[in-house]
Image 1 (tube, rainbow over the protein chains, first blue to last red):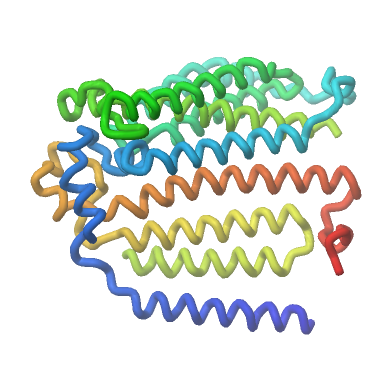
Image 2: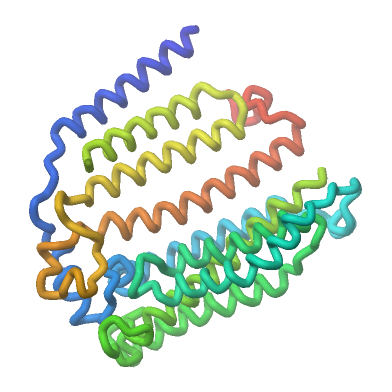
Length: 233
Length: 118
């Protein structure tokens, strides 16, 4: 009882802090200095139509590299924590129920479409509201569908690891190329900026976001595979 | 509009905190943390919203010359994109540890896990 009372008092305190924030909140009428710089200079500097993408991939590209590293670490730790001995990695002990005709046929139909959509989302990240992280999550959802339709299937970690490490290495390599050929680390102007609004424009942004998409997709997939292996306990 | 989103976000944070602090089941705590995480993201996006403006994507509808007066603040959106991805990673880690704890003790009740209690 006393616990619940303390909890409610604590939440009331935090809530009143939040209420103060909301009451005194005045929405900006104009973009602040940083945001208006991004709004005015993005097209001229980088040639990307989607300003959020320009910020993530180029202006704050180093943060994205860090973010991808955090995801990599997460996938590695999930794999490490959930690692099982080789002897239990074989066939599951209990008989799993059949996933059903609808799910198996649906998977066969949907899988290429989902993969195509994921690739579309991450390769058009500089033009449309999408990007590497969203596209990677879509790729991983294809993996989730595969796991749902056939829970007993064992996916080799080798392909996932290969995709992930190649994409990560290329990402860093492009960053260093930017250091050598253009203005700085992860500068996208190592490739021509091209015509505004075209698929092959905005320098290296589509390339970097494709790599990020593949890497994120591989990392999410490896997390899903690790988590799905805990099923047969 | 932005105010509604902001209030909803703050309420979600409070609901998440309540859930995380009042539940004893680790899985429920993880769900509560995800709810609070969503609330934080909503508040951040709401802060970047500006009345009568559009998404920070330039095309025929939003020409480059008018960009600064037509688009909302892109910085919070970039921030939230990062936060969502990291949130997924954190949730996956929490789930993995919860599984490991269950394997050790056969229970997801936080009161049974007393190793770090003093």
